[in-house]
Image 1 (spheres, rainbow, N blue to C red):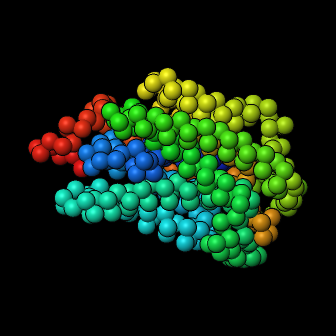
Image 2: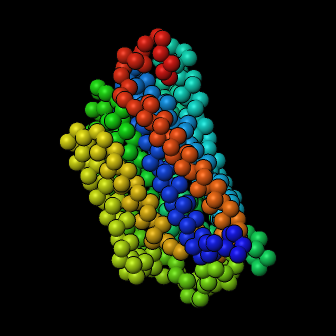
Image 3: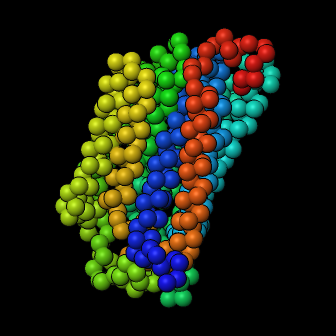
Length: 384
């Protein structure tokens, strides 16, 4: 037996779909509170010392959290080449905006305290806000467009044609998803500040985080209703083999209202995902008001898990539907790399993912504890 045949092709495709989801959730729960803290910075901190407290709650770990973003891009490139080709070319300007905003963060961290000028520091503080708010918004807008279908098609020779524009991405449902993403990550950032900061910063974070948690609940519910009534979903109308070739043009697809909700009828256990989304946000709100620090972050993480899982389970087996030519939509069964490639990548991931998780856990353990104002204002400290 050839080694890669130890796991059949269908199972490998499912495993990599699950791993992609795990990586996205891992980024949202680690890099997500970095984005949330940046978004909250102008609101929870009113003095220079308070802003430094907020910044230093993420200052020691934000770089390590970016590993999940890199892993996500790498996993898409290697496991789902057509998905990488369509999304990274079609969403080029959106990706550029995200990268520009993310680049502002390390520059802001490094340079804001280099001068005593109030104007200088305020400028970099707003740059950090942009570095948190803009990616959170655009990530959500991207998800909203994916749920509606992306305007691309494949020619018979598998050349990709994208016929959308950047401003077409800013449609009502996509903006709703963008606001949900901002609310979700703001709630998560507030939960992190409640845990890691002290004094007025933590108190204001608790207030704004409570508002964000309620906003996440309302927007998630509104998004579900919008998806049911106003957004068409996609359904495969022909036979498709889970072990077939990676050629999306071999199937037929229909656009139907409410099709994204069909999986919940066919597989009732999937309802656990939206339940976790609502319950996590509600419990995060309760924990914030009850001044529970660790449980607030835990419940906020559960909310992120539920909301992102809801999107993935609703769309399955689609990973990128096409609004221009529905049969060109990419699915788990017709957009992956080869059997051998997926197996080799799985072996590599089985070696390195535990190392990444163990190292990350060790770093957080070493750096555990609250950031105090006196520690960041100490002239001998290495704080930002």
